[in-house]
Image (cartoon, rainbow, N blue to C red; front, side, top):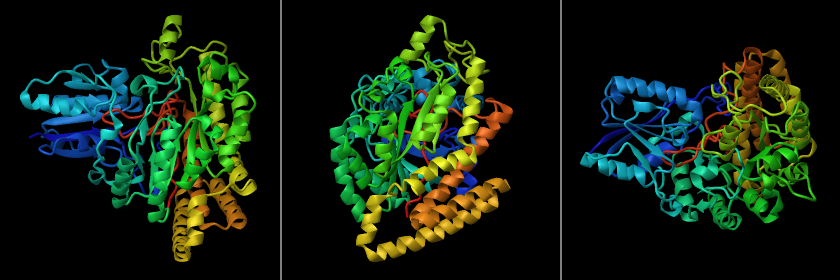
Length: 556
């Protein structure tokens, strides 16, 4: 029997980490890494497992050093901290194994610091390694020969997580994406054939999360709608589950823009109480989209704006990923991005510079063309050498757009365009349920009002800038007058806290440069992203993947 400790090292301050907003919410991290509870579930019962997420607790190296096996998982944004942790463990003679998104694409990065590495998915290789370890014949490298059969993935051990320290939970419905975006490593890791769990599996996971107090859930799939017909069947079976739980669980997820072409799918997502969806738009310019093979965003007869507005008007807020640095980008791209995000009414835009990850088609192409930075972008925030502008111009233009996007007036003008001017529906499925259930409507209204009051007080107490406090007060008062919905008021206050994080991040980047924070990546939801429930690989939140980690939605 082995004493196993599984560690997720802390993240740098990042776009999706919400570090500046977490104290306002009284939480330590935005979301738990899905690999931790899933690896625990994959571990045979004769072993003991301890989960350590450095985002919400410190690592006790004295105690960890007593373990027989210490496993680390992590993404590119965590690689430096992973090296530090492994170095400390190495000094103490600890047996270490490493998996996750980063080591899967940079297998030699940790050198001899790791005794064993896992490449790609590990539902089969993790138990295989444990059997080999018990027999004293483990290998240095493990990689599955075939993609994981998602219908056989066990329910993660959410009971081993300190769920009260996170803003929201994470669940995975599927893996894989049918598209071929040049910069994305999703198809490298998970393939182009989407693989889904069964509805029964998903409901079992939701039951486990609900029992542990989780009410806001990020569906971390890189593209939830990769197999539209299959996901429709899953969503239909989740509607009765939501009815049975009074629609108290709110979902948010990632999907491709072709969602706008399927009204039935939009309606099902709304009916299951999905509040927002992250879409990889990347660029308003067709030339850039064609260049990077994001053909699903290029459609004759309609525009990207029209498709975004269609999704929004149904009651799904759109968040998006935008990228600068494509070969077709020149100095005009920065204003084009500003204009598009404003006209699209997208409050939260994950805005980043193109970065080439190893094993992606983009990396291979730029390597052949001699357009990769040998220093891996340490001076400019990106490892690519653009075609039509200099790297300094790309960096400086990026910083200016970041600052402009999260100027308070610009941010709240986009938010108000949705909820005050257009008056898009907010949680229409939940609102309909409450109209049909009088006492639930009274209970939830009082609950949302109390939570809103508490969050407003914390916001006014913790935000030190008087101009920001005044902006938040004015905007919240307006939405209360126009919409008179306690749930929407709570959601709007959450948006204020998220804006505070993004504003502080943009200011830090503007004043001190890219070296002080990592605005391009973060724990999630890439993505974000964020963080997929697979073992031990997770979604990378860099601009080169689905990158999500959206906002919490505070379901009541």
